[in-house]
Length: 111
Length: 116
Image (cartoon, rainbow over all chains, first blue to last red; front, side, top):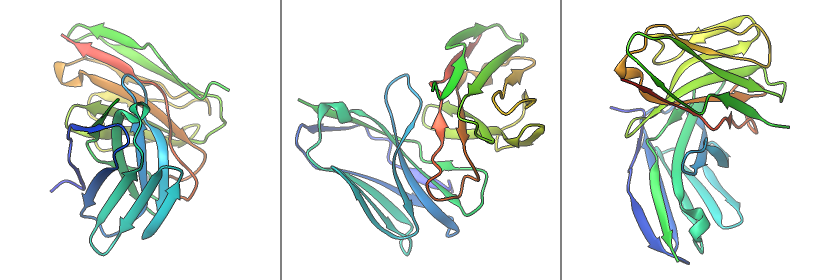
């Protein structure tokens, strides 16, 4: 079983739609949860960062962590063509020297 | 402030050749990492360093070597290139321990390597 599972998509939505991206994980010691956005031929860039369970909102983006279900989500409201990218979930244990990444979900927002 | 700079951007190697992928950061970060990204496999850690002179293996270190003589530079060496090393390689850095709040990884834009 992989440490982190993520549906690779691809996911295609019309502009203005609400997008839901999800990851599941198996390691209950994970405490830090992140979403990275990766544009084509670029390195990943941090989008959202959450510690433990709960919600975090930043503009059109909301990250949710449910540690009891080992499930994390990223919601994008009012999606824009500029949101078209691959979204990677990542997580780590406290004090760890590695991030465990999902395989990424490729999102296309159609104008 | 350039962040994390990787060179070259692209490279084609023949089987058995060797090369060094360069990585430099100007943020005075102690922790640096090398990942490879393969389709459908996500990012896998090859090697990491917590400071000058200190390196350690990640999940997939076979076929690679690293050194860290300065805080700024963290080169990755491929000694005998194999087709299985065809991948996109990303270098990343972080100010402190990874599992720490408000310490996101800063990635370079990658080196695309093909071994034929």
